[in-house]
Length: 112
Image (spheres, rainbow, N blue to C red):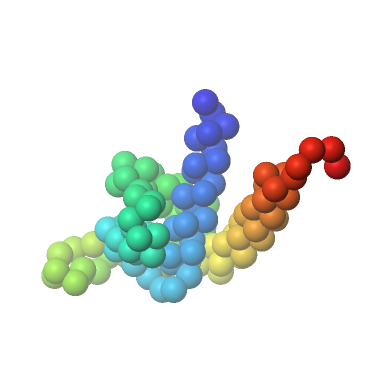
C-alpha cells in the first residue's frame, strides 16, 4: 500500500535526521546507531537507507563528502544542512503531535 510506504519513508527520514543531528556519519554508522539506540528493535535495511539518503541530499537536507571510516575505508559522510535541521525540527514536531493524538485515541474507552 502506498500509504504504508509513505509513513515508513517519513519515519525513516525522521530517524536519519535525528541520527545526523548528533554529527556527521556514514551510512553504515547510521544503521548501527539506530540499531544500537533501539536495542535492535528497529533495523533499517541498506536498500531503504541509501535511497533515503540520496533523496534527502537532493532536497538539500543533507550534504555529503567522502572520508575514511573507522576501518580506514572510503565512506560517504552525511551531515545536516541548515535546511535539514529545520526539516528535522518540523518533522519531529509533526511526529510528536501524531503520537499524542494516536495515544489519546488508543486509550479511549467508548463514546467521547
